[in-house]
Image 1: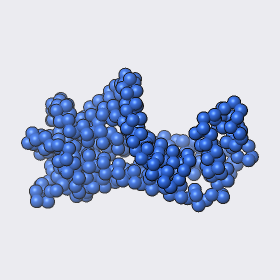
Image 2 (image 1 turned 45 degrees about the vertical axis):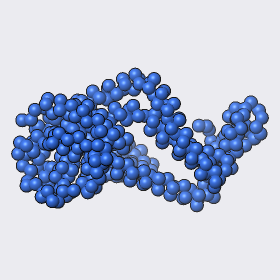
Image 3 (image 1 turned 90 degrees about the vertical axis):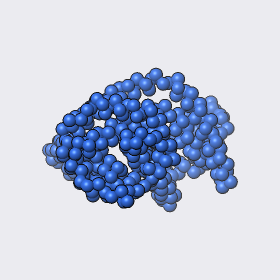
Image 4 (image 1 turned 120 degrees about the vertical axis):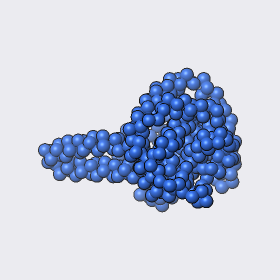
Amino acid sequence: MIDYGRILKRAWHILWNYKVLWIFGILLALTAGGGGRGNSGPSFQFSGHPGGNGGFGPGTYPRWPFLREFGAWAEKNILPLFVHPEQHVATLIWIGAAILLLIIVTGVIFAILRYVSEAAVIRMVDEYEQTGTKVGFKQGWKLGWSRRAFRMWVIGLVISLPAILFIALLIGLGVLFFKSSEGGNTSLAVGGMITAIGCTFLFLFAFIILMAFLGLLRQFFMRVAALENAPVGESFRRGWQMFKSNWKSAALMWLIMLGIGIGYAIAGFILLIILIPVFILTGLAGLIVAAIPGLIAFGIASLFTSGPLAWIIGILAALPFFFLVLGLPLLLIGGWMHIFQSSVWTLTYREFKALGANLPEEIPAAASQ
């Protein structure tokens, strides 16, 4: 039986005495997550003269010059996309393709940051426990930047497959409900709705249990890949063997961490209120920091376009930096939680391994990266 109290105290010690881990923790926290209508379209208009009451009502522009200019530009370039979309198919396709490309690029960047940081934290904590050596950020990044991180990404992808299947089942149930209500048979529609709702709750309950179980197994799969440099299939096999031999201790540690997580959520809500003055300061700092990339993007965009579009591009470039600086206090606190949780499971893994938790022979050191 492992000493749960000692593991928690040791993870707490590592958190506060190995501050380089905080950077990776922040990266993990950053990456873990009208009006009425008529037959002619929207009832509001941007058109009209700039006089009137200077408000935002129909047929008026705001009295501020920039907003007047933006209103005229939006009426000419944006409103037609919604009023007559069939006349702007090519434009909508280009917009959709740009959004899809942005999502893919952002997803790739976030995946790299997440799994490299996770591998780095696991290996840094393990090395600290073995030798007492603390490494800097550059050395820690090198520990994470390896094939191990890619294998961890593959493991995470495989574990997420049940979530994809669950979404597909929900879509299928939605289609079933739609088809049952389409025929006009009231009794059939009611029966289909009851069946769909019942199946949804059943699937949701089973899904929650399954994902909690896979989340527990994930802790061992990831550490076999990160610390033993095992291939993906071997990581699944050896991680399962370790869990199977120590499932009672693993389940109890999972319950302890669940309790800590609930306490963290409650404390986080209270901190969100307490930190309001800090958010005001970080918001002001965010405006200053975001102004630099925003102005750079505006200057570049001004070479190719003019008017509100250049301002929109500048604002869109500045927003991520503003929200990043604004949310730094929450990112730091979330990063602490990630480091603590990861350290707990790394120490638990080491305890199971030391107790002879039936890991097969080590992969030769020459194969490690």
